[in-house]
Image (cartoon, rainbow, N blue to C red):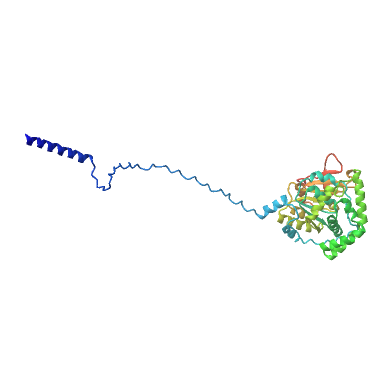
Length: 386
């Protein structure tokens, strides 16, 4: 009985020890205090963040270079928009014109104009631009201003008229008003005129300009004084010496070296043909041609026709001429004033017939303008005959 009791106690003790071993973790920690093990944190995968695409960098759009302009286009743009002194390349081209000196032996020299009503043409010239070709004396100055010409060719067979243009060009450079211009014809200014002439021209030309200033001064001054009186009475055109704005404008044209003066005879066509070829080379259209009354002294020769047909004209071009008809068809000093479009004028130049002149055309074919007897438009040539 005693033995059984002892066996039971031993069994219970063994069971108790067994439970203690299960509850106390087995550790080899030798520290004084037993450390309590903590559970390791649960390892979670890192959150996946969606990577935003980088913004697209737009490259600047570079436009293609404009097509290179050819010489003709550049020339045309220059004549439309170019300002200031004439570009040297055009000066050099124009100076290649070799105009033959004329052999004209004039009994009298037209240093001034006897056409007093050329204001009739003014409304038809506005904004024409282009090149201007003009004969005779200073009538051209007012027409140049009214047309807004970009380039000017003054041509005459009388070399004294050409020297007059050179003299006037010098005087325009030395004066600022019409009154000063007239004043500069006084003898005391001859030395200054000669000084400037020598700086611009060869000695022979300069000496003649000085001589002309002395010899023709009184005649020129009296003419313009009379002209100004007629203008005030309404019996003559407003012109470059009666109007400060017109004076300033022609002074500017000369100052910008846009005026070129050549000897030339209309009948042989030589100078005009050379001017035509140069204008074509520079791509400038001839818009205004003023021939005064030169044509009425002869019938149209082949050389003249060819030179006119050579000019680079267009639908805007005009030809201005005066002609002596019967007194009832004139105004002022015996002249009838005519205007003709470039295309219409050239139809006459293409005619194979010979023996006709401006007088024939004006007498037979003119069309009065504004019901006047002294101002008319000349039409195109008829298809058959003249």
